[in-house]
Image (cartoon, rainbow, N blue to C red; front, side):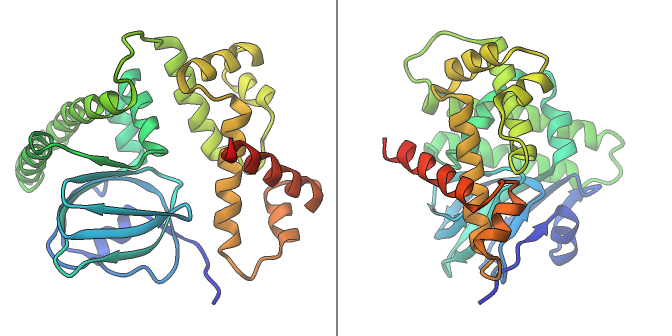
Length: 287
């Protein structure tokens, strides 16, 4: 069966569900029944945060199967593809959808948060303690009250401030997952890593040269490599291969496309170059 990837945006979300929102920039969803099934894969055009409070949810994220149960927290970033969404009959959860502009507007100039959230891009499910779950629920409830008051002239600013505080709380959880024993900070390297991944997610289909990314960041390829290795323990080429393979896996789900067409869309000179890319990435995954 042919599966065409469609874009999923906040506007569509607001039209299909009766939910609290501000200018379609921040949307709060209190799920108390089974979620609508996805007929086709959806490429996210917004950021989704959510806590599963009861039951379980399974889905594929960039072709990788994910499953969350009560107490699990998910972070799904823009550009990623969600498919095969299934919920148990008793599934419940609290979810916050943010437009890309509002998200970046909220975390601008806060490198710690943006860097730690990048970790969650490749680790999209976090198990929260009871206290951490309560903290998120408290923020959600306060946000819902502020958003639902159209007479509050400052509700957008209040929502942004509350979200920033919540992001700090979540970033602390992510920090404990990611760096349990490290006390060293790399502020400059973190910022460069954040900008590199942001560029990579947009341009990985047609730019795979480390030098090109270094040029966009106004640094040398050597310095870029050092920064990426310091923060992530992986090289820029490792990250480039990772994102290209994710795009390849997603493209292969569109069964009407041939390997030749996919190679052209991903800007490979020919199918042989694409095969080499797959081989290198497979070797890295086995290692």
